[in-house]
Each structure stands twice: as structure tokens, then as C-alpha cells.
Image (tube, rainbow, N blue to C red; front, side, top):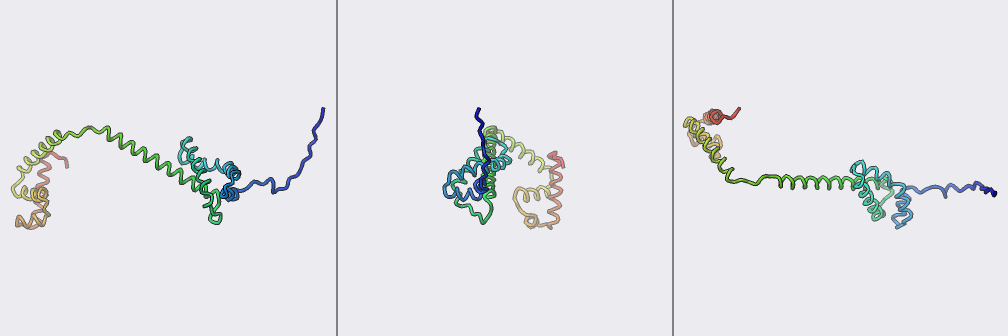
Length: 198
């Protein structure tokens, strides 16, 4: 039986050393596909981890990770090592993409919810509403009829006419304090007549 003898061959340290993400990204900027493969192998788990923490959904995280690496390939020339590390640049890009996906998903859910609510809303019944308004108007008129003439005048001018307290005072020829008292007393009496809890 032959026995294979192997000798330990020492390799120079430079040949074994792997390139840093910064070095790889600079090579990717020169369209180096091998460097891109190495960069992907070194950084994809970290990029995917960040994205997955934000998105939670595994398949969406994989999709966004692919988008990020496509963006890295297309924009590697924009990387400036004097402004930060390749890892920071890539993780910032990944974070931005993941946040965009979260916002887009939320906007889609909001839109679907609005459409769902709209579809569930009962049709508008104008006849019923006008009957209810007329009945309520009659109740208010009956209650106003139970006020004193002075209270009724002040309430009608202020609330139906839209006049200010000063204008009502001038129209009725009374001090503003009197108008305020009549309005307050009239509103209390209206509330009692209409059965509205205070």
C-alpha cells in the first residue's frame, strides 16, 4: 500500500489574507464580478439580518436583500472610502430600503382598509335623514316656544342669526351683560326642555 507523504508548505501571509469589504467594493466599482461575489459572501448575512429585523417577513427580507445588492452593484462607484466604511455604506442602503418597504406595506394596508370600510358602509338614506332633521327641528322649535320672549329673541339672533353678543345687544337695545344672561338662561332652559343631560 502506498502512503502519500505531504509536506507542509508555508504560504506567504499576503496570499491567504482575504480582502476587506472596502477593498472589494472599490473593485466592484471597476465591474469586478469576482470581487462582487466575495463581497456578497462576506456581507450578505449581516445585510439580511438588519433587513429581517425591520421587516420580520423572511421572503420579503430576501427580496429586499437582493434589491440592495443590485443597488450596490449599480452604485458602487458612488462609494467614497473617505466618508465611511463599505459596511456602513451598505447597511445604510439596506436600512433605507427596508424602511421604504415597511412604509409601502403600511400604505397598502391603509389603502385596503379604507376601501374595505368604504365598501362596508351602508348606503346613504336621504329620506330617513331629512325626516330625522325635520323631527329634531320641530323639537327645538317647541322648546324655543317655552322660553320667555326675551330669551327666545337672544337665542334666535345668536344661534340662528349668527350674530355676536355685541350685535345682539345693539339690536335689542340692552347691555351685553343682559344678552349673555338671557342666552345662558335660555340655553339652560332649552337643555332641560329637550331632555339633554348636562
